[in-house]
Amino acid sequence: MFSTTPAPTGRPRAFDIDEALDRAVLVFWSKGFEGASLDDLTEAMGISRPSLYRAFGNKEDLFYKALERYTEGLTSYFARALAEPTSEAVATAVLHGTVEAATMPGLPTGCLGVQGALATGDESRQVRDALIAWREDGIAHLTRRFQQAVDAGDLPPSTDPHLLALYLRTVANGIAVQAASGSSRPELLQVANLALGSWPRL
Image (cartoon, rainbow, N blue to C red; front, side, top):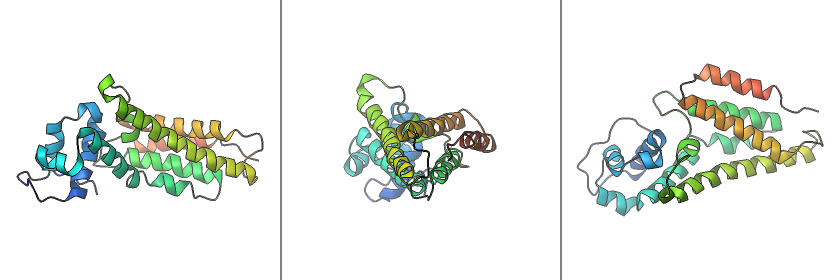
């Protein structure tokens, strides 16, 4: 997954859809939705515009498919983290997974879901709103998991599950932004561990 070698051109009909989608993920991840032109996408995917439209729809449709691919692939650590036995283990898996995903050698730094459309014009508002919903969905999953932890006695009864989920997601998003700004994996792991050091305990 996520080969960074440019795909060969001249394949108007037959191409590997999964490979092409992986290449679209890289373009959107590195350039953002508005920064990624159709020429950027078709060149990276090794297909013509008509082939892109037939297989994926318009640019916005392609972005949503790329985001889904990204979620199921590189950021699948998040779903696994929710199954950890304690809230602290959940938080550790989320933050360490964020650091790893945001600093993978040979791939763009940061996070597609955070940086894909932070600042857009009105014409890209739907994409921006979709990414806001993507991030809020993560907070909702964490909130439910931390409520379970409170009910099970794993977190203090006074814990606000939503506030704790928002805190964790804010730290994770900040790690992604710092990765895109050039912070190293060791530095970001230290940041993650510093945040985990204040995790509420009984």
